[in-house]
Image (cartoon, rainbow, N blue to C red; front, side):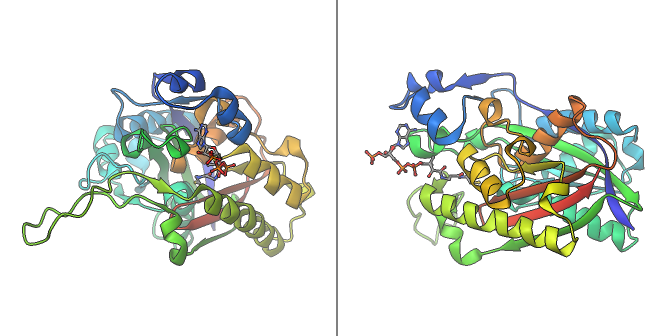
Length: 320
Ligand code: COA
């Protein structure tokens, strides 16, 4: 028994901010951002929260799948920007949906969060513990950006993507996930200062810090290798894969993966131009856009692959 995606949904904040908008508040340009990353516009949350975007995406996924909130056995949210330390974003979503039978919790695997949630769902379902679940990737990264650091803040956007999953004979055909904590320092966000009066407060390190070139090197080596391993394990040729839905961090990373796999540029959809990097939300938002456009047909082989802080990575091969 494996896990199949029954339906998808996504939600983006109302406010859009173009590269030109950013160039009015910092020393950057549309030309620099577009040529180095493929990003044109991002959605940034003003009124929206990680939970409100998650709930919106979840409602659409439930509607798209024809599953009711009461049927959900679990809700897992991949996020590093939950609105609270506790309760978790997943518990807030559970309450809003009235999914009172569901066990709900968040996982922190940064931009790989949706893939780690999918694999956790598989583990529960394959073990026979649960039958139906909701997995979400959601972020309001704009809250933890250093808006004085042009090398990071221009790259990210806010949003949420969701999928309803259920036990089935087909669906997830193979996957792998991994972590390299030794390299965690290249993309980090320490969080809150220590509030213990016995400890002297260190410098304020609330915001994201990134060594862009190290992250880039990690991505262009780890992602194709991870995809190649999953394809080999499942005896699938890259040519047999209909879509490679990769984490949307940088169009140059996507092109590099595509060249290594030699699978054809047209199989690598990109939505960076209007969403930027939404971390854990990027894979499910793109998957939902494709679903809404009718690009996914029953039986299609689809690779999902995410990578990011931790460092972490995860790849899945699905039959739609
Ligand atoms: N606008 C204009 N100039 C900028 C800029 C911006 N927003 N950000 C940085 N620059 C400048 C730098 O200050 C530097 O100037 P200098 O040469 O005068 O010192 C120059 O551009 C080149 O910077 P560099 O960091 O070498 O650029 P790069 O080619 O490595 O591209 C990234 C930077 C961030 C786009 C690239 O490293 C990258 O995409 N890395 C992966 C990041 C990622 O995907 N993170 C998320 C993973 S989940």
